[in-house]
Image 1 (cartoon, helix red, strand yellow):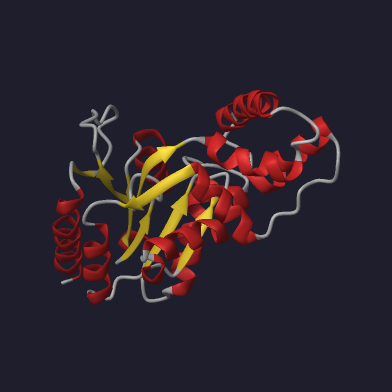
Image 2 (cartoon, one colour):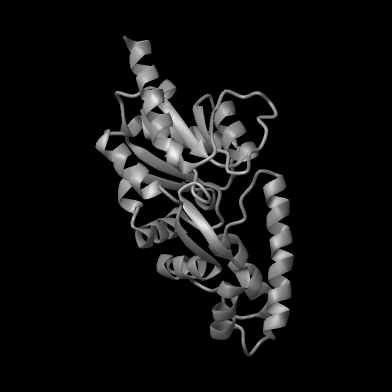
Length: 243
């Protein structure tokens, strides 16, 4: 079996999300002499609208590659060159995160079971920046690779994005097959439908008790405490099928 996890609200829980908390130090360092914080904050809201338009088209609007040049074009000066560490710091200012409940224990159990694990995330921040945050949370060690839409250019439920992850995971694990891949995610439209359309099984962390509107093939759980048992049942089913 191979497990591919969604990132936000699946393995990492967002306690606080406020873009201005990251924008404020960026403004103080680069734009304080060019505009007021109220001005740049309003422009940030405008760019968020642009991000939403990109997402409607299935595209990602990456923070470093796409958004930072917009500030230089608006207020002058060179485009800000961010290191991966600086990008991760910005992300951590904007998003106060902690591990999802019971996820570290589940990941530890899956590692003992010998299950290779990956992360596939819709995020405007690069996989390297997301990786740094997982290091801070103490769970990066469990994942062989992390993929972000900021690097790929398209967002889930894009079949191309899922196929990229699936093909890479299978290349890493040549004894496995696509039928043995399970995606774990919390969002119906992007995670559940996307994984189904890509032809892999899904464990849906259905925190909100939403309806499976399309009667898709899915193992729905309401709490991360159920995750290990659900994966074990899936593994037993695979063994019985092979047997």
